[in-house]
Length: 423
Picture (cartoon, rainbow, N blue to C red):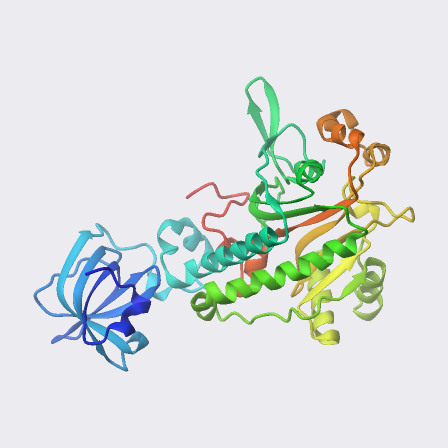
């Protein structure tokens, strides 16, 4: 007999099947014993008689038995065990009671024992949801003529300058972990015109909030021969619709476990930065600077939801002071840069980039950077680059907001923050 997954049990009523998985939970009622077996697809109830000795939870196991209907069992079906084999028995009790997992448990405990807490259905569900979103990301862009690229994560300078770089010793040189593939994906626009990358990036920022990680998965896009940043935002709208549709299809079970409320993707309004600041100051009574903090983003998201009934909001025409050197300047102190808020959380930063060599040099100096540090990047702009732009989606933040997770760390298998290097 071939293996049957927990979610497939209902198709085999009256038949003998083979289950393989983990001893998720057990209960002894005296005359009868129940086991919940968990595999990658879910859990199924197994009825076990006294012939079989049951070890500690999380032992890996195989069950051969007959499927019967039972409306009281999870999913309405159970398996009457005829044979049980344990591949490896747990040698000590699990530090986390996986069947009782809850976000309200001490997050440090859940993260410290991540190697076992991830086995729980609720803990692993955001990762499955995220995998479906990433699959949708790749599939849509492949269909639009984009080429996936793979850029270095050890670099000689940061894409955005500043001090939020992890320095490393690279033989006799000083190097850094990449904070973004930005400079490389712009270079590759001169090769393939349309490119994307799915890869980790690193930010040496001294934060400890529920929405920041020091290593996260960045979904980067860059495209050439555009008229303006509006084309970039148009692309992201369609991309997000495709990603969410893929997640609906591939991770429906996980979405139900997490209680996902699918967002309104029909409309994604665009609000210029100066108008967003006016709303925050005059309508919402919040003093704000050029770059919006977490509180301002939440307030804007709530305002847009109440005013327009939308979950996504673009904030456009960011001032030069709040954008990196490569943002296309309009000449009036603003840029063709934008952010995308999802339910009050920034998940994207993007815009049109500078494509002329002399303008890049001017902006680098204006931002206080030494052009010599960006010599390799600047070289390509001497040989003709098209008008181009792009964006980056933070995969964990998108997952966090979609699944309404209290902490972005739950959206990464093994999160890295300022205090965590293990597991």
